[in-house]
Image 1 (tube, rainbow, N blue to C red):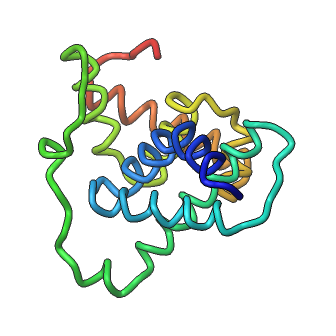
Image 2 (cartoon, rainbow, N blue to C red):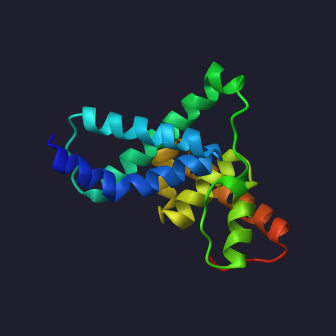
Length: 160
């Protein structure tokens, strides 16, 4: 793969991969490391995708798997490297967006992941199931529970 093609792929998907890793890890440094590993995997794999959605799905699936690997690692279990959300250099246009973001980030990992993939990346339940490796019914249940938790945290139902 030539450097022009690599740059094109990186520019197109780096934001989505970073957001997914950050939503999973809640840590800027780990999200950046995972993003780097994902793109190294992509560039070293000799895969030709049918279309852009398949490539994006593959990248997000690899991102989720690398995040899971990180949480299983001894380095993670014994480190105290998390960065407070306030220092994560996020940009929200309104106070409501900021409140929603912080509420989503306060959810457990499995709920954060499905909320991120469903609302921010606009994947269907079937596609989320393929990315995470969970059954579709489990994804539906996680979305339902995540919405319920967000409603409790925010005190109202949001139209996302």
